Length: 294
Image (cartoon, rainbow, N blue to C red; front, top):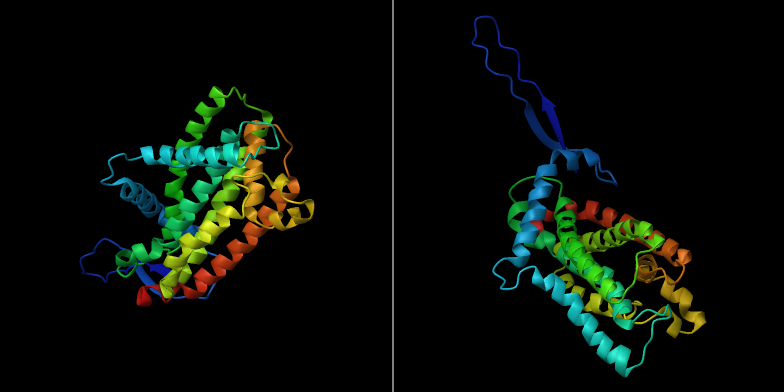
């Protein structure tokens, strides 16, 4: 870990011209800490803003449709899953809502999570030219990658509002839990993405394996099917998947047709905290070698 130490310039002797005092900043090794100092993030807050803005611009630079892709991606997936799973396979939502709304409410957090985790997982390697030239808290890179995708999530909520008006689904009291669910899925994306980006610096196989891992994760999560289609004895296994509580929580908060699965949400929160601790520990252990091997 690097620590900055600031001191004032020496006071000039009598008869010498007094120059403006300037702080002297020395970067030196410090004690290893498990967690990051929030004060460093505050000192570099402007850099974090520009990193987020850079990621937003790079994602849609030289694209013909631009942010329209944010709207098209979940909508097209909703239509495809409605055709194959809702119509052909006959899967029905257990809370009585139309299947397109059921699928979209699951795709909303999943699309954000998958995009943010994939962006964060490749963020350090994509920022190699910056990391090897200047010092700043390296954790800012995956944080900025996840923060940029929050803009996509906000746009997707606007589309959901239109769909709810079309199917005449009124707002309900469960919406007050929605900010908590957004924080939970953001924390999960940051934890998983931070772990992947640290490993990706040393093992470039991660870049190839990450999309495949996310694809498997998608099908073992109740995104396009309800948990109720599985035998009751397997429900506890599904609850170990943090996306289970998040996806079911989004549906309960948005539509209010079924009670919150607080046990699944508690497991999702605990799993996210454990994954976050593992990610921070791994990131800190490997951080000192990023500039050398990236």
